[in-house]
Image (tube, rainbow, N blue to C red):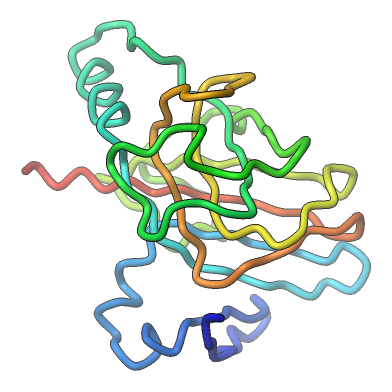
Length: 190
């Protein structure tokens, strides 16, 4: 079990920060994935930070896109998972996770993009590629989500994935809650 501290963000709700992260400000800066849960009946917000890693197949995807080539994989769908590798790794694939039934969600219109203007995305930037996925109240419910990843539509077996996320704490989405999931990939030039 991961111990967390609730940090109030004023009108923006609250964020659960793992105690390890709360103690080390440098680790807070490393959160490059974000879940924003909003209870549409009460307006209560919960923000869950996470870490994601671009896989080897993801590196190849970005290289092919940068060169104007058609990528080998059409990464376009997010999957939520109730279990997965810890830590997430460069060779992860669809089969590395226990996927929540019915959780596949296509990337939001206009994404991926740089310099994301969505005010919920605190990790946006001019050199950051943002992927956004939105779940309506009618999607789910999903319980005890610990991991997520981006893959191809209707993925299965050992299908490749672009990236994999590990959330700071597990989260759930019920029929009163909408959800946004952001993945931010910073281009470091290395």
